[in-house]
Length: 167
View 1 (cartoon, rainbow, N blue to C red):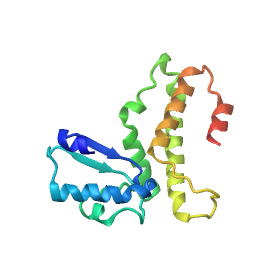
View 2: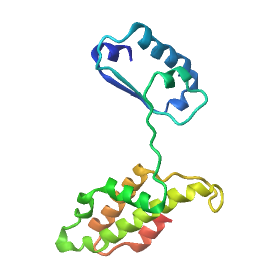
View 3: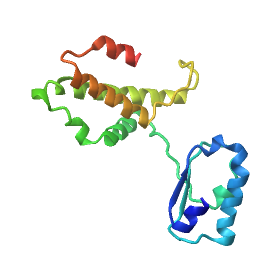
View 4: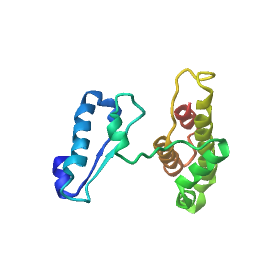
């Protein structure tokens, strides 16, 4: 962080809530920015964290806070997923005379719907779920790549493997 303040680089500290013993040091570093300043005005410090009581209040008060929450409702969730995927994902399976496209769009819609159901189900708490799991954007993107691999690499869709992987 010290070197980056001199060079004008950006620093990203991820999952700060896991380093509770280091929060005091972080608070001193950030307090130093307001008292001593930084040498290069292009310097940026990005922190990612879940809500934590150990996170220094002074750091929160001196920074800009952004939150990322999943959309409310099935419709909003599906629209968000389709926007994240983009048009190029819908059109990417045109190889082999459209054979891959036969299943691709249907599987992609099914995956997006599954993602929306899991996201919405969280608001009901423990009713129906034993373990709470957030099926987030990185999970749906990884699942999309697996579906793409199934469509491209197998002449016949391996339904048993697909059912096994998706539960």
